[in-house]
Structure formats: C-alpha cells, structure tokens
Image (tube, rainbow, N blue to C red; front, side):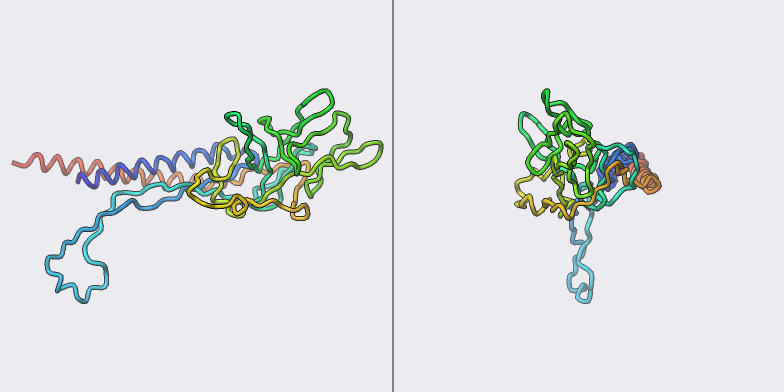
Length: 275
C-alpha cells in the first residue's frame, strides 16, 4: 500500500504540471501568434522482481520472466505546435502575419548585458525613435526586429511605408519606391528543439550536450520562400474545445490517483487495527 501511495503521489505532481500547461494555453487563446504546448509523459524507472522459484517451469513462457513494478509517471517536456493559426485582418501597416508553418521572425533580445537572437510568430510591430532622424522597427515589448543586416532602421521622413509579401520593407521617396530593409525570416527545421523563453519568444537550445548545429534547428529563408500578409495578424492556434477536453481527462486522472492514496490509507488503517 505504501508503494501504491508513493506512485500515486509522484504521478499527481506530474499531472499538476500538465494542468498548469493547459491553463497556460487557455489563458493565451487570444494572444497573437501564440502556439499550443502539449505535455509529453513517460514512465519512471521500474523495479524488476523475480518471483519464480522454479525456472524450469518457464521453458515455454513467451513473456519476460518476473514482474515489473513501476514507480509512477513523469512529464518529460512539452511539444510546441507550430501549425498555422487563423488570420485576422487589422489594416494596420506594421501588422504582419506569416502564411506558413514553422516560419518565424528574428528578434534581438538583450539579457544580462548580452544580445541574443530569438524568434517569434507575433508580427505586431511598431516604430521606436532612435535619434532625431531615425526610427527602429520593434516588437510590442520594444525588442528590435532583425533584418538581413541587423536591426531595421527607418528615416523619420519615410512615406507610404509598406511590407511586401516577400518581407521587403518599402517606402516612397520623391515618388520612387525604395527598399528600406528585408525582414530576416527563419524556418524551424526541428521545431521541437526550440526552447520557449516566455513573452511568445523562442530560442536555440542552451543544452551544450545536444551537440547540434544551430542551422540544423533553424535555417535562414530566402526571399522567394517567405510568404507574409501585411495589415493582418495571426491569431493563436489554441483549440479551446480540445484544451477543455484535456482538462477534464487530466482532472479525472488526478482524482483517480488521489483516490488510490485514500484507499491505500484505509487499507493500512485496517492492518493497523488487527488484533
């Protein structure tokens, strides 16, 4: 009974993490470009016990000898679903939606004094003054949006600013179309290896033991591969009905393990009460 209670307690702790993840998905159902996270589970180490004292009677046995007693389940991580969300038209010049799976904008983030490239699907951009003559294209959090040559800078006097389908940022100067910059887009070749850092951002894994080159995870995209829609934003791809179904199933699993602890306690009480 003590073993069953320990197994149930361990599993309940892991199920609580899944409940937290579901709650995180539901709370971001209206977040621009948010991608659903799904919990992944596996069994913990099990103990193998040889309960057969007469091996000669196991000659024709097809299954492995002995019995295997588990020690619960663990949440091994979460997978991010980078599938396309719905497109919502905003008619705002600096709103850009990505039309394709596994494609991401490149963003520059400064953390602990060091600059790092991160990635996002959120295309709600803004102009932030840099000096008296220039503005920088930034995210809602103020992080610079990266172009092919670094952060994208625009002159204050640009007119008729547009973002083309291929990621080119165009303006009109003296009646002529001028290329102001090119959005640096990447494709997540192995999206499951990207680490979520919060704020709807992702980065390359920091685990040096993985021994994987960065371009094996995200690869720069050519201009003719990019497909964007200006004046629109991608909504979250959270399926609310699925999340609520998963919530119900996970709660039932949590209750089942809780009941297992309760029944184990009752059985221990009966044993202690024997005379």
